[in-house]
Image (tube, rainbow, N blue to C red; front, side, top):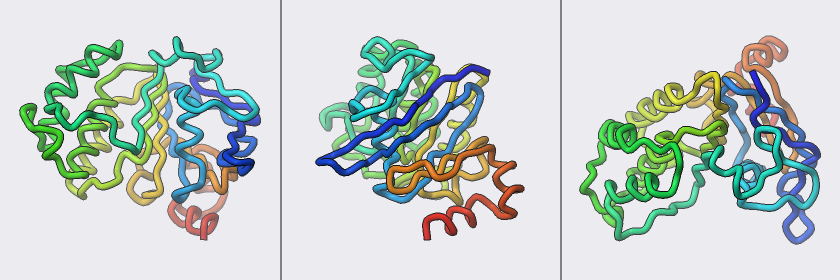
Length: 231
């Protein structure tokens, strides 16, 4: 295993208020990590700094041992919570957009994923429901090959049946050469696919560890521990 993402005393402040506060982490290849915490805890800000979309106030963030600069982004997939496709596009054109701009994007994989999620290539994005748009974002993200794959709340707005398809897609995407980082507050849904957990509260990393070791140490499930930490 190798270190894919590392942070040291990473801090981001907005108007003097920390969104992420002195976060230090090391994420290894071959692992699926859960970045867990309620809305507003700092999950998205941490991911955006790792993706190079937000500059830290202090501290450092590195991908593959290198500072996050524009050239490192080809090694990073980041799926935001916000929609970023244009409404005039079709599902097919959205895939072609990714194929044109992102190295390692497989349109074949994308086509299979959107079909498995109940989407059709000729659908217009302006006609998609919020749940269908969320499926489209996820399909586009996991159709790229990269060492660091970050999915910000990938299950938001997703129906129960489609969740199984999405979780299976995430598991299939994970391999010994990449790191998958999933942010979520739906702990009961993602717990079973995680290798490691990171609890973030008010911008602070308050707990990290291997899922099985954390369960044994605290004598409870990740869901129950989450309830205790964030009650």
